[in-house]
Image (cartoon, rainbow, N blue to C red; front, side, top):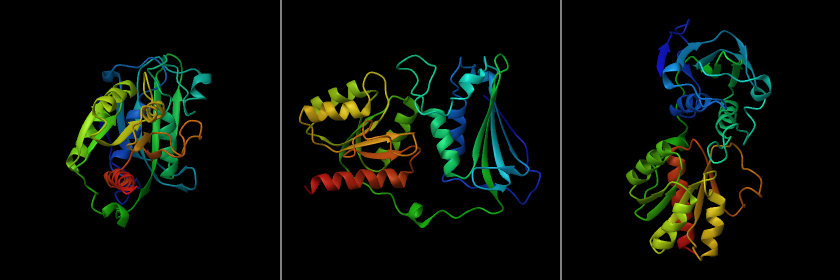
Length: 274
């Protein structure tokens, strides 16, 4: 993938407001996974610039723009009109979750920015992400500056996306935990059966091929596993109770190290105190 950058037209506007430095990159990666035939990496291009006055979700103002363009098949009007719907996908069952662009939409709205998609059949697709620009760097909130909570227990990490699984594995290991991994719910259930006495907590993605996080939770409870569960989801806002029972803890992606570590520690300590 080629990256191209252009300097902002006004030198006083060098920053954009986002909860973490990874947010723009994560949104860009998800925005490039469009619900059509995927273009090869060499056919994609990233660019950055600062826009003139544009209307976002909540206000007018200056925005920093991250644009992702491909030369794939493009999308027709009917598909383009649904790309931000949660769980909508044109990919085969078990391949696409339909949450990637819904997560992008939610993240941009949280940051008081917006996302614009343009596509035509045969002409590829362009996604533009607009983050509110600010004149000076914004200090991190006090809550984000707290030291991450640590531990030495054994955890089971169930995640089908290899890149995210590796990143979460590194994070939890740096916090002192011993981490077992599985790429879907079926592998996770086998690990729980084989080493249930060792596992202090299970953290699992919600939507995965073969068996998702909620089904894994129910199967594990049926087999007598009592370890707490922490589900992760890229869909902003808690889904309905039918999708995720209220007794299961949930953390939204992208999570911060501080948020994940505190959630893990609270669940383990709460379970041990019962």
